[in-house]
Each structure stands twice: as structure tokens, then as C-alpha cells.
Length: 405
Length: 234
Image (cartoon, rainbow over all chains, first blue to last red; front, side):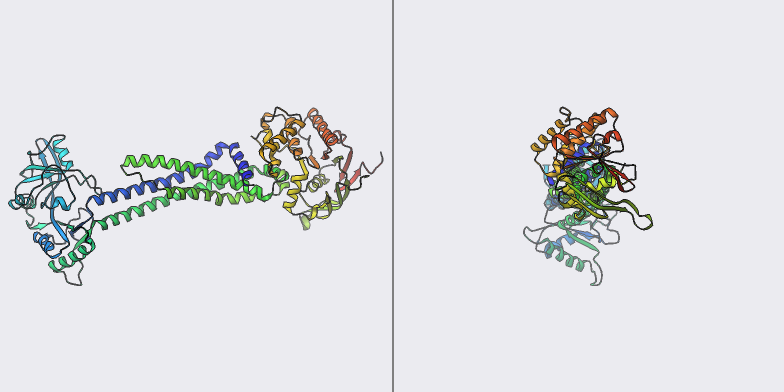
């Protein structure tokens, strides 16, 4: 009986191919939109996870102030002092290295080329703590740090801006009246999870930075502390211990809130992933509305179809079709339409999400579950919105139906 | 009638539509019998109840009172589905408007009742071709109604009605939409099916020319059988 219903339904669809394709368009667009949105969202999440892990998985960041958004000025919160780094290293055993980081935006030039970029002062441990690798040359060492030598290491973006293809090693670049010898170039990392270009920077010894770049600001100030945690030890423990230590050093009363924040990269990754997840579900929900609209479109056409085919239904009833056979025929017709729309929508979504992820530089993460779900939902929509018209068809009085003009 | 067990026995059948003030009695107590193998024309002016009696005989409708026995079954006691099964196996319908499925080939139209009987494809096609051959439409199997003339369409409809080898063929104004030449062809076809294939035919018509082809005429006036050619000696 189901095969007969399927055969009859397919004949009906074939009889009115144009209308059938217009009807399923709503479902096609709905399914394609849902899958594309979710695929893009998954791609973004995967990208963020990859980028955060490029920071290093055992990294703990200490910043003045309470928020962890990038570029947040310390504002009301007092800056760290240079000896905070040593204090942490002494007090918290699980911390392997600490890099004090200060930065200031400057116009950096070489010959006729120039670019505006953050100039960062830090210690030799910055390389290891930040999980960086050298593309060429070397990093500055402790001697240069102590002596406050004007040597610098370029991020890949700055190298490209100032030297194009050529090697910058041994050349002198200028910023804020300082002439600085380039001794190394870092391997590129690309965009950070926040969308910043991580390679857009110039690194120099902190002491040199404090003398030559910091300007009138207090020379002992340090913007951010980057901590690397010993392998196999808990970063959460370090976050806790550092918080306690810093409260003590900054003289915060027990009833006061922290005026600094300590977080590890896992927390950043979780915070960002949860944001993208929320966005993904939001977009998916919006797309799901179009699926609903598509379903209503199917119901509409099926109702029109029942009215239009009243005489035909009468004929079928007269030659001995049972009520449930007519019901099944119309129901199968609606389900066939909507599931076909679902299949086409999935194909379209694959094309669209592949194209979009490529264009946006996101990884293409195929989620089979969402495709199965979208297909099931589109078939379900056929049943849901096909039932009312099908019932109406099945319950027609054959005499009335035959008389229908 | 001379036969012992009539194919159809109608006893005191009434049919009332609506209720109360708006009630309309279409049949006011009709009784007659039909033997297997008869070719009966039902005549009468519009509103005389001939369509109502046709719907009741075709098991599309049930009488308000009275009894209708078809093939020893009390149709007035059957439910909607039981009557559908009876139609599927024992009845064939021919309509004035042909009622073929548009954009569907003659073969697919004719095999439709066999589909509801659940026959396999090969058998469906064989029987449908046979029925089309019987109405003289061999070679037209793959034409759609739009590509056929009115007479041909009605012959496809007749093929659809007889493809199940029904006991009773009901034709409602089968020539109403056709010119006289095509009408004669259809009447010849119905007569041949009646005589050579033993199908009992009951035809509603208002044209005396067409009624003349039948072996018996029932004339309805005002919800009653006014004249039965079988009961009145010529």
C-alpha cells in the first residue's frame, strides 16, 4: 500500500513539476540556510580553538584591570612593577618563566617605507612563553636585556611592510628617534582569536623599551605578565596562587575586588567558543524559521491542490480508493516533496558552506549530525503540514467531489 | 423478472437531504429489481431522483430508509470503507465529464483501479492494455487526455470502468458531452460489453435516442418509478 501511495504521489508530482519545484524551494532554502550557518559557526569555533592553542596551552596571562578584552587600557588599575615578575617566579613554584610585556604603538620606518605597529618591550623568555619560533636570525639575550641594547626582532607583518622580500638582518629601523638593529624575524602566527594580527609587532629588550620608548610614563611600569606553567602542572592552581600573591602585593583588602585579572588560555578559548556557539545557535534558529515558512508553503500548496483536484479525488473514491489510501497518497506526496527539498537543500548547503568557508578562510567542518537532523526535520515538516490537507482530501464526500466543478 | 436471484433488489428506498424545514425528499419509496445481464436505461426529468438512485446503486450513498441488496449484501448496512471495497471489486463508473486524470496517459488512467486492488505492475499493464483494446484504443496507450478526442476520452473512461471486470457498470449520462456520431459509438460499445461480456449496464440518460439502446427503461418522475418497461406489456 505504501508503494502504491508512493507511485501515485510521484505521478502527481510529475504531473505538476513546476509547481512542485516552486513549493519545495522554501524547504530547500531553509535546509540550506540551517546547514550553512551551522557549518560556518563550527568552522569559526574550530579556527578559534586552533588560534588559541597557538598561544601555547600552558600560558597564564596577568593583566591590570578586570576585563580580559584586548587592548583594554589599565585605566584606574595600577600597572604592574618590574619586580612583580620576579616575585611570582619566586613564590609560585609551578611557574617556569615570566615575561613582562609593555607595548606602545609607534611609526616604524626603514628607508622610505614605514608602518604603524606596536613596539613591545619584553624579556628573552618572551619567545618561549609566547610559543614563538624564529624564522631567521636570533632573539636578544640576557646580556642585551641588562645592557639595554637597541636591538629588535620583527614580526612577519612588519618585515613584509618594511623589507618586502629582502632580509632585514643587520639593517637598522627607526622609531621614536631610536635607531634599532634588526637581529631576528619571527615565524608568522596569523590572526589571533580576537582577530588581531599577532605578527604585527616589533620586539625589543624591556630595559631599552623603558628608556627609549616609554616616554614620560613611569619607567618601571609593566603592562602585562605572561607566565608559562611547568609541563604537567595545573594552570588553574597557578591562576589561584598568582591571584593570592598579587592581592597581597597590591595591598587589596579582603572585602575589595581584584584590580587585575589572571586567566589561562583555556579560559579564553572557552569564553570565545561559548560566544561562537551562542551565535551559531542564533543563526541556526533564524534559519530554522525559514524552514518553518517552507513547511507552511507546502501546506498551502497541498490545500490548493486538494481543492483543485476535488473531482479527481471523487473519481478515485468512486473507483474504490479507501479513505486511508487517499490520505496516504496526499501525505506521501507532501513528505516526498519536503524530503526531496531537504536533499537538494543539503547539496546546496554543502556547496554554499564550502564556498563560504573558503572565501572567509575558515576551516570546512562537516557536521553529519546536523545534515541528518535537517533531513529528518524536512521530512517531519511534510508529515506535519501535509496531514491537514491529506485528511481534508480523504474525508471528501465522493458525490460532492464528483459534482465539484 | 424471471431469474431466481436478482443482482439488485431495491425495496421501499427513500432518500431525504437536509432536515426540518429545508428537508428535501429526493426518493419517495422506490422498489425494483435488476437481473444480471440486463442493460437498463434510467430516464426522467431533472430533479426526478434518477441521479440519487444512481448514487445509491453505485454504493456512493446510502438510502435514508428501505433496503438495497446488491450481490446478496445489504448495502444500507455497510460503512464507508466496506462500500469502497464493494465499489473496487464489483462496480465500474462512467461519468458524463469522463473524469480522467489530466496529464496522465491512457494506460495509467486505466490501470488506476488495479493499483487500488494491489496488482503487480506487469499484470496491471497487461489488463489495462486488454481493456484499451476492448474499447478499440490499441496504439493510444501513451496519449494523455488532452491528446484524445471526446469520444476517445470516454472510451478510455469505459476501459477504466471495465478493467476490473465489474458485475455492474454504472454510466451517468455517458454521451452527454458528445456529438451524436460519437454517442452512437459509445452506445455500440456499451451494448457489446453487455451482450458479449455479460456486464450488467445501468445508464442514466435524458435522451430517448440513447435509452432506445437499452433492453429496459426505468422512468423516474418526482422521486418515484413512474414507468418500468419490464412490468408493462408492450
